[in-house]
Image (cartoon, rainbow, N blue to C red; front, side):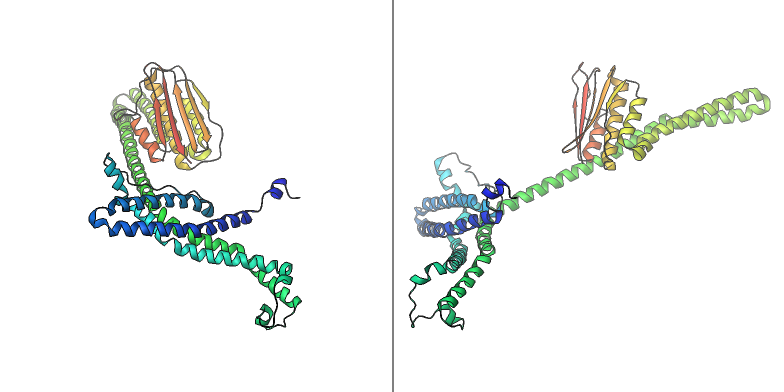
Length: 429
């Protein structure tokens, strides 16, 4: 059963047929008006420019062509099924009326508008001929049985059946015209659509094509700059992480291994003179070995936590919250597995934030929230500590900002003195 909306609204291709038809039929008289005014203004302005009188006339003609161009951009939007952006026109640098008057002469888009005003008559005429012919052929052919009686049929007139090699009688004549009308009716939509697109694409190329190309170049340059910033941030983040790892290894496991070697050497000497003391030294060395292994496991979690790889972000954050010395209120629902880079970045954001809370914030509680939003993943870590955190270089969060930026995300910190800290990271998916 067709819906009420389907019964009241015509099909899309019929609506588009009406839009294309009115665009072409109105474009033909507009093309005549535009070519007369633009060509006359251009010719008079250029012809009299030598005596300076033509410059204001030429500027006026360019301003007039800009108005016609704006009207055409509004007209071709429904045909191309998209809004045509208004291009950027060069504004007058001078604040006086003289500079504003002559500013169109120095504007490249104004000259493109003038070129369109002069030459638009060519595609408009071609499109008008096709559209008018196909509509006339379809309507006159399909309705021929209604007015055949009013058409004079004399022996001197060559009828359509005779042109096709058939006998000239009423039935044959009506059949031939119905077949011709059906042909035009069946091909009406694609022909009218093609004619309208030819005229509209010609207009778009001159009236907004250069501006769209300029915008694409600007967007490409912006994307390149963002990619370079992400690359630099990734390099900086990896360098920071490597320096931190080297410092942690030097301050922790390396010192313990040096002490372990010294203890084992002392135990080797004590076995000959005092075996009991040697056993005590070996026991201390074993304790040093266990502590070294614990530190190495902690460092390995900072590089690539196995629980994150095996069980996902929610499980890894739960383990982080359990190890934190400050009570953690974790809100991290179980989502489907995300991109490994996103999960790793979110994990390190929370890990670094909890480390800073435990070391510097003097907080009594910390809230961790991970939310899936339309644009990506939102990670929030807030505490009730002393505040004062910053993303400036030299602070602990600077390297974390580089890691987030390398993943294409944004990191923000709200940390007023005495009011706690709220760290928010938005990561794209």
